Length: 397
Image (cartoon, rainbow, N blue to C red; front, side, top):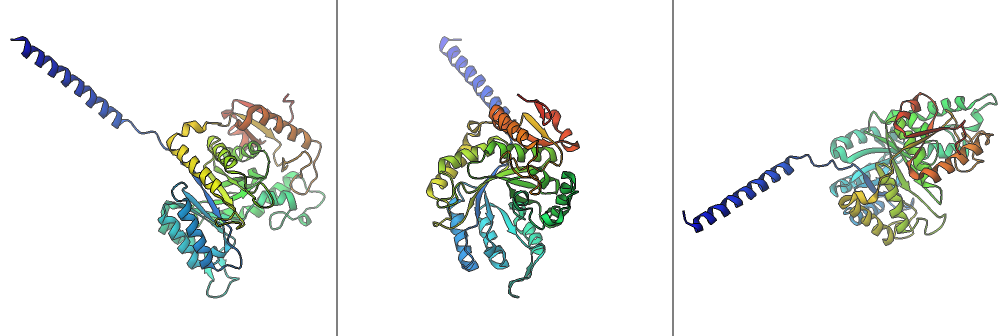
């Protein structure tokens, strides 16, 4: 056999081996299960429609907002009562959101029938919810019902959750916790017969909101309050009850421009993502510009976060819960200052300053890996999952 033929045969054999190995590698890679994509919702709450606007005017505003954000969000919350009071415009709004491939959450304020309206607008919200599940499928996430039950209780002892006039001098923290549960659980448990999930936003008493039956609570990132503390309270409660949780970025200022900067928004969205939240929402109210309180700075932050989340999520980091701090069961302390109220009824007591100081110390030490739990069986069921556990009745320094 001449040398030229041997050379050709050798080259062909090498090429055959290389192509075979490439083909096998390709088959192997294609057969490997692709890593599961984390389910995370990021979006905006449309709440800036004015009372003197017609439902159609608010619908047009919402549609303009959807067109603006549909390429870099996946959730729109309808928080305008002007839309939800009108069944026709509510359905038109949801159709528009659904056709933009966004998921939907709807704020309702009536228990079952909106009847304190003109007869032409009266409708049964429970029937609408059942129809929405059929029409929008998994894009209809659920409803938002009774805003800030815990926060309002801390600040006002507000009816119908807990009214100060309902409490006698003999009431203990446990008695008030039971009353809170009895009053609040009506809302989520009623609606869960008609809606896949029931949401609310809050800035305190997250544990007891979950205990009452809410599917997910959105921790409010508000003002200059510690984001890590809200994560610790909300995520700790969600973990203990086996539920989802999220954040909603609300006002930083009590006057225009209301919202934080775009860079601060990006930081808050990143914190929500890396600490394990399932939802991150930006609250837009009132209307100081075309899109409420949202400016181009905020839209750019949302778009940048969306690109990073989808293209390089690892760069956002991870801060899973590793440390637990356990406070007494039924201790409805507000955690906003050492003098915050307990259940909105009792003044701060001898434990309040220590608990407040402990939480500040632990968040400084462990950052966003801290969870806050309430002593009892619910906490006991998850304590083994933490690397370190501290209790209110021990020295932690």
